[in-house]
Length: 607
Ligand SMILES: C[S@@+](CC[C@H](N)C(=O)[O-])C[C@H]1O[C@@H](n2cnc3c(N)ncnc32)[C@H](O)[C@@H]1O
Image 1 (cartoon, rainbow, N blue to C red):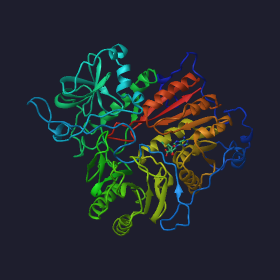
Image 2: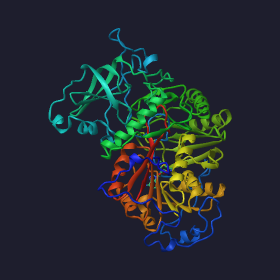
Image 3: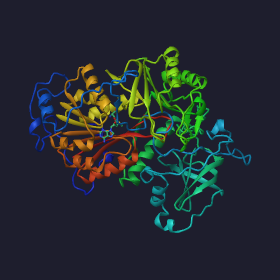
Image 4: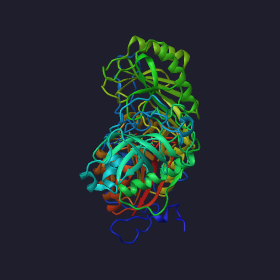
């Protein structure tokens, strides 16, 4: 029997047994502890909201213990008197088709050939051809959670006993292995007597001759030398740079198969990290576009003004002349800028010497409104950059042009200081019936059609709530959807520019049952004591900090919608929410990032 709310029966998970909680009460049933300041009532003016149950926004504002930041005025390029905008930036998966701030793959140093059998021409298999040098990748950071090697090695059949033994392979060995499944980076997991070997560009079920690269105590990395048995789902990658550029990991799988693999990756994360067995397959909502869906590209600029994307798990630039997953407006701007930067005498940034002027070009476009924004990320505002700005104004004419000064060492894309160079300060994007202003420092979902599906999902799951607290709300795009079907929504966001835009976006769209707080979620926990009946959170990849999750558990909220771009942290936190008395009612993936191994998902919890 299908769940009346669209939930998946097989997903009802609850630690510690006990009967499932009754469904949350409807409007007005949220109750709360100590929510005195929020009890005011005012007749709702929006049709979809539960009339008469909306707290007075002024009452709500007064009751909040936090300072309300005003929308920030952004400094113009040549107005030294004004203070520059300093926005704290979270680098997220939204930046560019290349690195997304996590472990990516190294260049794949494949040597074609070695025998007539098997399938190897790159055009047929998606495996790159000869000549790509590079070192085997070193995984770091979230690797244990990500399904990275250490997590795999410990979680695998060999487990601890295995790590006490010497690895059964040595660098340079050539082995025949079969891929079992994909890890969270999109690499195939192969095993030799339980010992894990990670191999990029191989699909589950495929058998290949693998050259062993770096060997660690619990795992090794390898590369395909010869594909011996190809999956029927293997397909010809549409992009000629696939395999060398690190932006996409799954172009060698048919789109239908990519969706299947992503559902499996999510399920696997829940099983291995969350220790939660999901009874059935996870539904993955497809993207309407398999290519041309992405509205943002962050291209590193290498010495001699070369633009491109990083190779897997490295900062080595792969010069590309196009990126097929980008929307048309972004591709056009990239192509023009590439020509300009090369001929301009601009010196791209050298990470090692911390020299050069142009570091990154961030291009944002909207096919729906025809607007585009270009952010030139520079070390200094040199004469060369000023000359480039003039050329960009004349010959590319984006709707909005910004300079970002980033004087930090390393590969973090954006610095704290934005200078408005030309045109509008924001561009417009459309989602559903809403129009949103986007600024240079604020997060926005990269695939607008899938974002609509995701936000509508969240909206339906909290529909009828009297008060919704939305943590990590960005510039208020999901907020607008939530506000359609709830009494009142409070959004919390740490980036000042985003909060200013969220307020402007609500006003532009005639939404009056929302309020926004500029704060870190960790500093806004007091809000959770104020009688919200639903919490929606969409944190960055690392997930919410433990104190945020704990406060959600201790709040009066009976419904939680957790949106995540990282199955590992979602799985970890799902387990914690279940320990705190919630039940996992529904889990769905949304294919926000076709051709890549990234998985966006949303989970509904109730108690
Ligand atoms: C994945 S985005 C989601 C934004 C929004 N839900 C959307 O779909 O556009 C995460 C947001 O959380 C913000 N953020 C990151 N860490 C935060 C923190 N500790 N407290 C509050 N906001 C934070 C980021 O600036 C970003 O806007």
